[in-house]
Amino acid sequence: MDGEFSKVQVYKYVTKDKVLDIGDMLSPDPKRSKLSITIVEFDERFKAKTRVKHYVDSDDFKLVCRDILSGCFSEWTDHKGTVHDGTPEARVLNIKKDEKFRNPFVMKIDNGVGEVIGAGAVKMVLARESLSIFLPEFEARKLALAVLDYIRQWETLNFRKRQEARTVIFQPESPQESAA
Image (cartoon, rainbow, N blue to C red; front, side, top):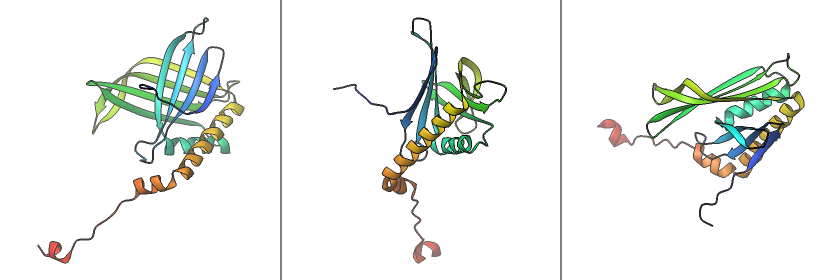
């Protein structure tokens, strides 16, 4: 079964022309522990027209989920990027609650051309693809609860691996090394 892989879908929301998918990319290493967030837009024949993707740090998204569930969430923006074949690619996720809409939670992902700044950070220069999806309050709370529960259960099942990945060992200097 070469070439096969599996991805765990943590949450999915479907509208008449879009799909929001949140997938598991969790890892014991906190720098690599992510969730993939994908929005796909379809045409009238249900053929995918546009797809945007973002990879969010699980620790950050746990806080967003907690804030949504507690009713104190207003807005959050996450900037990410990578360099592929020498070309910087930028991704921006923005989630906000805007009470003027019937479906007040708006999730927007921009994918585009980036520029490397500083020590490897990538900032958005030109958004080439952008999609938004509106969620009702109840659906946003379902998303938050499903994702938060999933992450917490994964962390519990992988407690020892996470503990080893996050443990830093300090070696005191020996008396001979400090005298030199």
